[in-house]
Image (tube, rainbow, N blue to C red; front, side):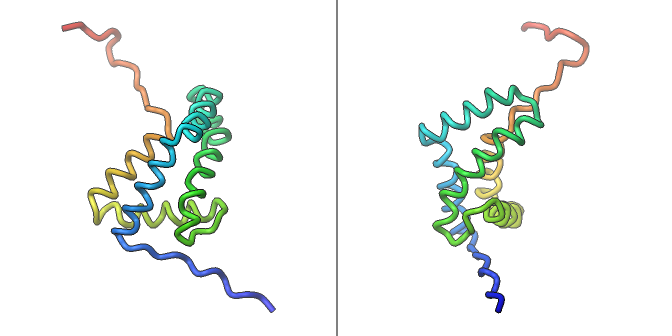
Length: 122
């Protein structure tokens, strides 16, 4: 007999703010920051390598926080949490700001070459 699927956690906007704040703080823990920095350096801003090296480390860091709130301890839990955050981004500017901060921790800065050559000094 198959067991019932696990209940998907539901968080209020306030709870989502707390969890998102804890996730961001987890990336600032020296051990986690070092792991992320090492993965980013190994990836050399190559998006393919970022997915292979940085994403798994980031997922592990997030899992450690969100499992306490009922999300499963696999990649699926992180995806469900990300969907929940995305749902609340349009409703809550604080969640939107924290989500943008989290994305900036995960993705390399996008640099575009200057148009027209060199930048004039002022």
